[in-house]
Length: 457
Image 1 (cartoon, rainbow, N blue to C red):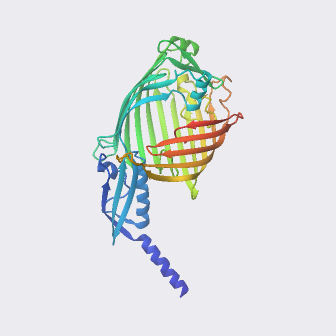
Image 2 (image 1 turned 180 degrees about the horizontal axis):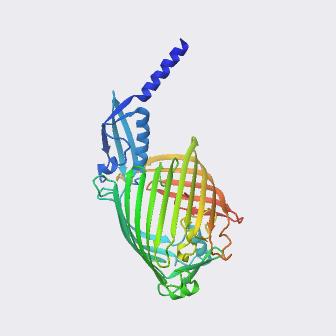
Image 3 (image 1 turned 180 degrees about the vertical axis):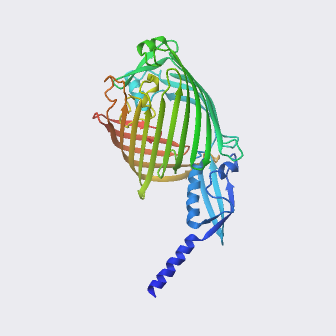
């Protein structure tokens, strides 16, 4: 009798878990600018479809993460009301402010610490490595998640940009297009690397001029996957003195090079928040082929990320990235490996050039303050009167290795294992703003405090 009762209880719970419920309606509130189609495109469930309660719960969570990662909304909430065998679902969003004509005032360095070091060595009086100008950024253009960008930047590295991104243009909303036209010029250019430090050449006239035109077709066959095909035209011209100082800067002592490349990439995205992920995983793969008389190698790049929460408020994140080049003989300006966008933490002051590299990053962190929402008094606009913040304390360990087939021991960090470790405090707030303060130690025994404004992964 006892076993029969237990069986009946389990049967009831199993039946309830497998019970099908129909989504009778999907209501969307708060999207003043954003069109309904943009929001519906990110939902993992559909109207008039049946789901088990467990399945629907997972799809609601997944849909909220998809909407957050659009970066169009400050807040997203999805609620449900069950009525017999049906459920009404409501999506509430608070939109961000989308039009940003703001002044540009930024440092023109690889990171804050390298800029501060140079600034202090010049008695805090050299402001030459600053950029200034204006940047017009119109997000969610026409309410369709399009992006329109215009930049006019003067200073250390002049940059002029006109860009347009459209997530889709076909009826099925699966094919999009991105295009950019860029122009760069600099009076001071790093022409070589010695002892893993950049060497600069400066001239009264412009020492380096670059033209970049690229167009990218994006195919999104489902919510989590994207295929991209990108064509790029690049023309680079340098001062004669740079070609003398480093004949391999553009290759073969050239002062002008024109290069075309075709790049295919595949992105699989299933993280809860791309700016600062705590749960989920992601995978990226790309292959780029250059077509030029001097630049004709192929680059293969791959990256995988994983984030888990083994116990409440404790998070573990890990990533592994690797780049492989088919030919070792490449112009100097194309051999950026670690020290720019990718780096081993605690080696921020160094640059490690090479044709191929791998980079592993791991962090364990604890939520000192979980995501906390608060209202901002006296602010009437919905885009700004509600904010959030969170604070994390963590430890990290990074490993990296750069292969340079042509380094003549001028840079001791090339072809050697790099290891950095330390502790960090991360502060995250709305509009995807992030501040990281890290104390780290590298394999050379050097210690320091480093500031960053983006995710370490």
